[in-house]
Image: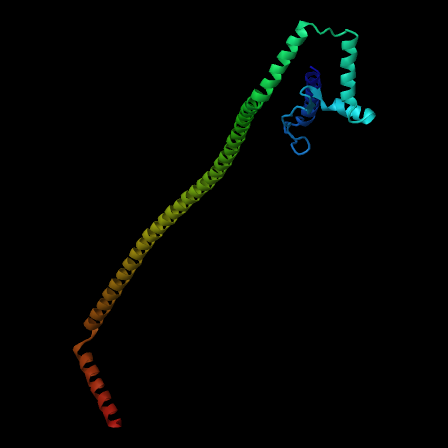
Length: 243
């Protein structure tokens, strides 16, 4: 009974400390696990004789020594029995037999039961930790997926920019092609006009030359032609004499 009271008081103090610590660490939405680590499952304190807390013996040890707690217990029991404050009737011996059976059962069945219960507690704690770890891992995977999606979105922006540049290049190529077609057509027409002018000029010159030769030929009389021929012969003879 006394050990239960001590354990309850310790649990109450721990729960109060956890409430204060939780209120101090949850400010801002993030837990400061470095300065305020997560609570660890507490273990019950040490006891002697199966039900007396170790703190009682430490309290007597500083005043009466090592045998003080036992002397106090034996003296108190002797006083209660001698003054018949605690009457040892048949229920007392029944209680002794029950206590003996409980002691034997605790010694025989206590360690396996304690190991089983500890195993169950560890399994529950492991399951909770696994669920917490899985939640953290899923959140980390979600963060990585979000980063990947952001990276892909940036790639889509680059792809759209490249497509815009390709469209601009295609427009520039089409513009230059049309400009070259216009230049070629204009040059072809100008070449045609130039060739036409050249042909007309050659025809005009040929026609003019033919007309002049014809008119000159018509204007020369037979006497003028004979005189010119004689003069040419005389000139050739003079040139031949010089040589």
